[in-house]
Length: 140
Image 1 (tube, rainbow, N blue to C red):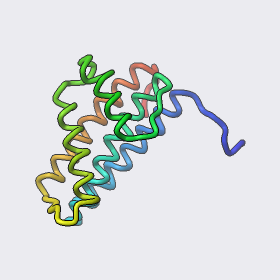
Image 2: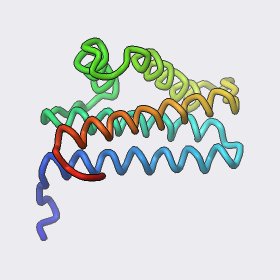
Image 3: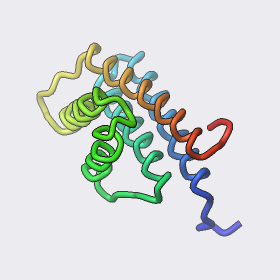
């Protein structure tokens, strides 16, 4: 098999959803260990990879997270393909991840980490269902 062999759009969507689920699992493990900063990071990346799965449906990929999130907001939130409330939740997750990773005096709390994990879980479920329908595949 060629190291750089390309798969189908469905393969890429599956891979990104699986990556999102793995990140969510890591967030839950970190949460249980009281590592709230790390849980915030992994929950955000679960969200990011799930959103990237949706973009893969149309052959879109963005180099910057900012562009990935902005285009998801424009194409899927503002058009109400996904609930508008997720636009705010995703923006909040990005802010919290950034603070958790880079702000020296940010205090990551259990409550905020739980909130980020719940947002990631809900969004992954919605995106997975959407992608399954669009790709006409049985499961990811």
